[in-house]
Length: 228
Image 1 (tube, rainbow, N blue to C red):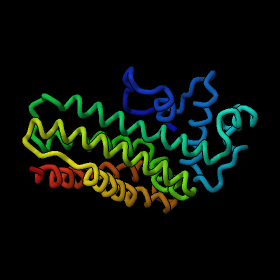
Image 2: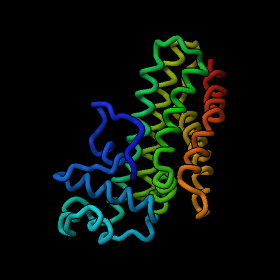
Image 3: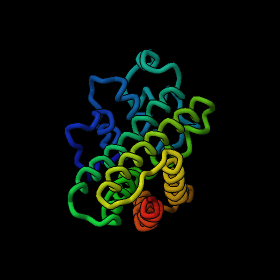
Image 4: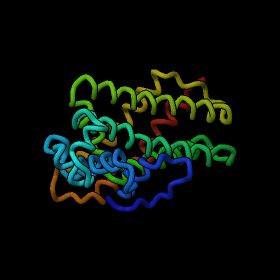
């Protein structure tokens, strides 16, 4: 992983910053294991990742691994939840900055969707893994995916309430928020699936994700602007 272009604020969970920058605390073995799993997922996908691979990259023993995780699936799902914190954090920061700034409805939504897409584009190969791998691991993975999707939907509901108070837009229901999150993630997934072609560089995939900003903004504006 490369060092992020974003600057982590003081309220960002350290392990989230560690995943983004690849710089886990040398004394926090769990964080190092999560960062190692994230890096391996981006590099080779979950199917070929072993516990041996994870502990070797984290530079810890297998005994240490099993002190924190029962198996590689539990490590994967823990990593998935941690990685999801990054975009959630960026969305919250963008929403806070936009509130009270006098922006139009579209401009305010664009600032938030831009922050979300920037977070997803930061490590596009990891984004691909996070959008595809957890749900394929069985019931636990599907539960984790629903949990994360609900967290994003809850964030959208809260954001819509703030935007609505300033613009007159109506409330966003949890069900509609989930549909919106699902639609946005499908657009991002379509962009990152180009990584399956070996000749496509991660930087090019990132550009495809960032190029979705107008489309995602149009979708969100169409939903929020028609609520009354």
